[in-house]
Figure 1 (cartoon, one colour):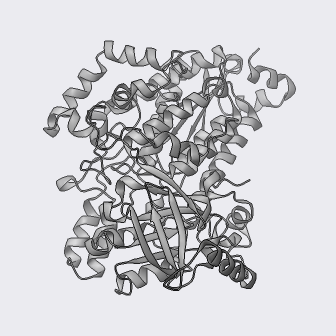
Figure 2 (tube, one colour; figure 1 turned 180 degrees about the vertical axis):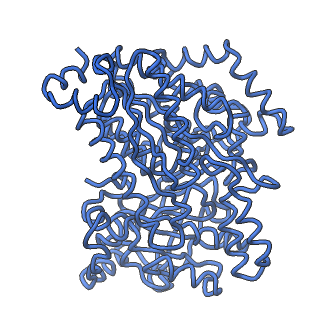
Figure 3 (cartoon, rainbow, N blue to C red; figure 1 turned 135 degrees about the horizontal axis):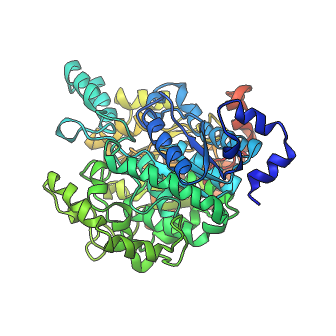
Length: 572
């Protein structure tokens, strides 16, 4: 008996209440399919999802199920930038996951279709899928088109810094702002939204080739219908998400992450998602698997092209074809077939021919966008986990976006206790080559772990600073960030981690090949490990925790209960 039918017998009010909103007696007997989306007029990634949700619902109904539309709207990290709204970003992920858990379990469903597009909504839905453990299929809302001259939103931060420094006019800056988002969909670069859409497909939870499609294309509407129809079948088959997604599935996702130079925020999200599936995935796993992994994708911010081109070049399947020798091809997927079988089907059914037709309008060859395994952009992955006396619990850097000059360096510490102080110092030329800018008390327990996007843009838009300083934080970075940025430093400052004890002029060693982030000197002078340990012990005794920034509301709850950023930053 379907789970929904068992619950009907336990809750006699359920039938009349459903009939009160138009269900028939026949509907009550059908498999129940949850259509859960983040639709809302909150940002371009969610504003178009109602149409897709309705398409999925209609297809589920036409295939013998009865669907129900539910909504857990997300916020936009872009709209939250530059003010305290960004502190809600990571907390919103867990909040959405909690609300979906409530939706799914308070009523009970036999399968679910999950629709979202962006930074926190996609990982939130993936966390919820692992937690509620019903047959589940994901539809992502795709990516927006690029603007004039391939303008994309991640360039606005750099243009903002240039405007504040007087390098472009107000008229130029206004033009860029008014033309960077010409359609719905996720922002058109390989930020966290695009990365997490790809991760959902890499885990086997999406129809093959459907991640990061152009949001305006008819193909996406057809995918939504196919997903609704497939959910109706999955409800009867009864294979749950946890039965399908395994440790091998997550290892495949990590290798795809390396190939696309995915956002560092993935090291927050995939471990938190894996935890909900009962699987341990650590940052060290990322570091290990990225070593020797081939980096293939020439998409912004690290590459040249907008993310709109990703689908034209063959999308996730093309990436997987190139790195196939490294993948577990025997993992199961939502199609009911293995990954290897899906890739073979795509070769036979004209998928790549369709992509090639779309690619023609760009004037590019697919290898301009997705390189071959034999000719990668890089062969050492794209992220590294650095450890040492400054980050005993680890820290994260996207080394593919760091200038080579900064892969090994000794810098002088310039600590700030908030992003506002740091960015002011950068824009007013108080930061100089050879400095290590610290932004601390911005971890999960400090302020909710906001992005340091504008600070990274201020640095990367200044060629001299981009190749001569580092930014080190217990906060995190936007997926659009590039440049010498090291985040997720653990333990964080709010817990009294070593980052809280760094003082002006301390010497900081960065060694990305050696995976080292450490204090190597005190107040401008080199010192031994013993001397540094003794001085930091003295500083720790004198250190006093800061008054909690948030004591009530969701941020009070989140900051009191947040796990380490290197464990996923979830609300424990």
